[in-house]
Each structure stands twice: as structure tokens, then as C-alpha cells.
Length: 67
Picture 1 (cartoon, rainbow, N blue to C red):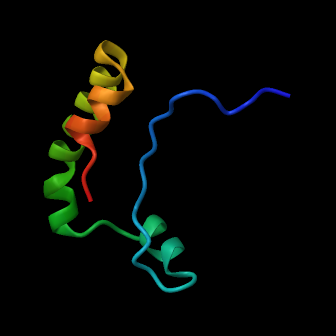
Picture 2: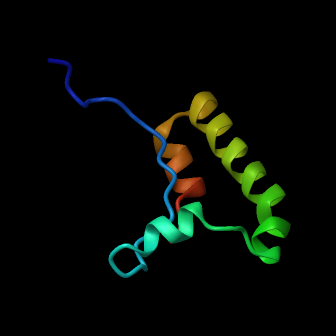
């Protein structure tokens, strides 16, 4: 069995939902505001992935993790 001793990037939607609401959020239509934010979100995700590959986990976590 292979262990889980490796770094990984995770993207989530948060946990501020009542039971069952996540499905509606994930599969529902995007709002106008969400559509407008999409280019920035994609850039942020790409920058995070590049940092992870170039300078490693610790620096990337310090630079990009936020609540």
C-alpha cells in the first residue's frame, strides 16, 4: 500500500453550507459576479500551481494560503 506522504494542492468551496446545499452550489448556475471574478480566480490558481512547482510547498503555503 502506498502512503500519503506527498504534497498536494487542494481547491475547495468552503464549509459554510447546510447539509445538501453543496450540491446546489457546485452544480448550480454561476452568478454574474462569479463570472466576472473567474479570470482572477484562474490566474490565482495558475500562479499557485507555478509557485508550488518552482519553489516548493512551504513558500507556496506562506504566499497563497488564506481564509
